[in-house]
Length: 125
Image 1 (cartoon, rainbow, N blue to C red):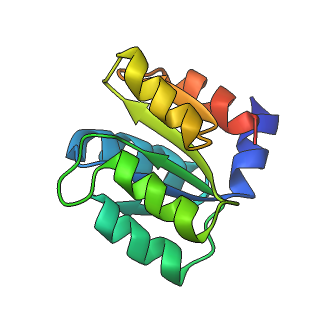
Image 2 (image 1 turned 135 degrees about the vertical axis):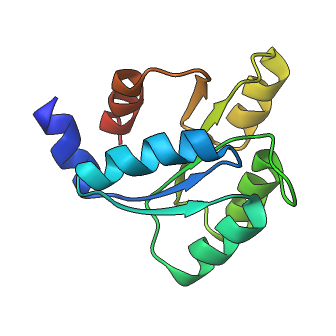
């Protein structure tokens, strides 16, 4: 577990979700772990963060206002294919996982998620 946390501390993470409760849980945990991170509530906000900051890892929901997670990742891929992306969504349909694969998404996590599983996913980067 300590190795995973140390690895996470070396990344700059952008977490994108429109659900306040989930953002609060992730933010509180990342703060406690001293991880450098940004939070955005939609894809448009997240694009501004990526354009103005060095981000190593994006974790995004699909269903969001203004710019959904799929379109957000498409925009990332237009400009910067080096940013690793994870989708964390309640959508379980295979079509979303297939779309994620075509966009070179590293992992697809289904909500609700276990935080240990979340750390395991981060450990892969």
